[in-house]
Image (cartoon, rainbow, N blue to C red; front, top):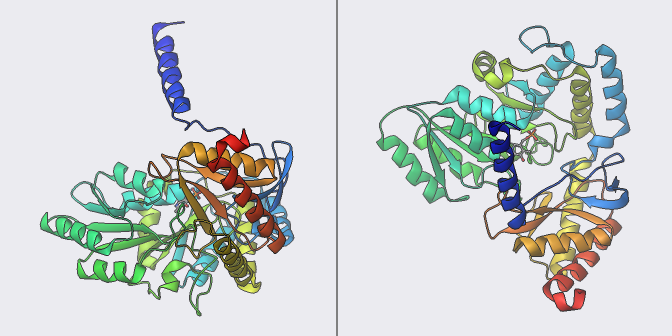
Length: 404
Ligand SMILES: *Cc1c(COP(=O)(O)O)cnc(C)c1O
C-alpha cells in the first residue's frame, strides 16, 4: 500500500469506529418484495410503518401499468432536459403538477434533494441572505450552505425568532433574502405556520420557498385538495411564490418539481444547475407519476389516509403513548436515547412490525425517535397490531431486567 492509501484507510476506519461507538452506525435492510404494508424485509414478512408512500400509489396497478407502457418510449431520457431529454410525457406531467398545485407552471427535477439545492443556489448567493427553520430538511440546509449566502437559522416554527432574523438581514442593507421552510416537518410531522410566515415575508420583502415533500398529495384546500400545506394555509402564488414538492413520497415514485410563476420556471430552466447539468427524468417514471397524480385527483385516497391517521391517534392516546403534535401521516414517538429507540425498534421487528428508528444527525441530539408513517393502504387491524406491539416493546425497553 502506498502512504496515501493507508492514510485514507486509517481515516475511514477511525471515523467508522467512532460512528459505531456512538450507536449511530447505519446499514441497509434489503427489501425483497414490492413495498407496502406487507413487505419481505431481510427475508422476514413485516408490516411496514416506515414508507412515505402515504397513498399506496407505489404499488397501484394502474400506476405500474402506465409506467410499463411508458418504458416503451425507452428506458432512459438519454440526455438532459435542455439537450434532447425532454419528452411530451414530461411536459404533460409538468402541466398536471401546475394544475394540482394551482400554479402557472412547474419544472421537473431528478430528486427533491436536487431541486432544493438547485433552487436556492439559482436564487441567492454571496451578498444575499438565506433564512431557514432549524429543523429544515438536510437538502435545504445543504443548498443554503453551498450558496454562499449568509445563513440565518430561526427556532422551529418560531415566528418571533424568524422576525429577528429578517431584521438582521434587513439591517445588513444588502442583497435579497430567501426564507425556506418545510411545509410539513419530515421527522416531526408538524406543520409550519405558513400564513404567519408568508405575512412576515411580505413585510420584510423576503421570498418564501416551501418544501412540500410531505404535504403534496395529502393535504390542500377545497379548490386544490392535493396541492399541499401551502394551499391548506390558503396562500396564493404571490404569497408563496416558490413551491417545491417531491414525487417520491405521496406520489409513490421518484423525482421532484418546483411550481410557481411562468417567470420563476423560465428562470430556473436557465439558472438551476441541478436542472441543467443532469440527465432528464426517465420517461417511464414521468408516465407513472402522471398516472399517480390522476389517481390522487380521482380516488378518495386522502380521505382514507385521514381516517387512518385519526384512528391511530385515538387508539395511541387511549394507550397513553407519547404522541407529538402532528395530524399528518408522520407520527413520531420521541424516546430521547438512541439505545432505547434501537431496542424498541428491534422488539417491534421481532413482533413483525417495521418502523423507522431515527437517530442523530437526522434529528437533534437527545431526540432519537420512532418514526411511524401511516398510509391509506394500512388496515385498522394492522394499526391495532402495531399499537399492541408498541405497548409491549416500550414496557420491555423501560424495564431491561425483564427483557433480559
Ligand atoms: C424526502 C425529502 C426531500 C428530498 O426529496 P427526494 O426526492 O427524496 O430527494 C426534501 N425535503 C424533504 C422535507 C423531504 O422529506
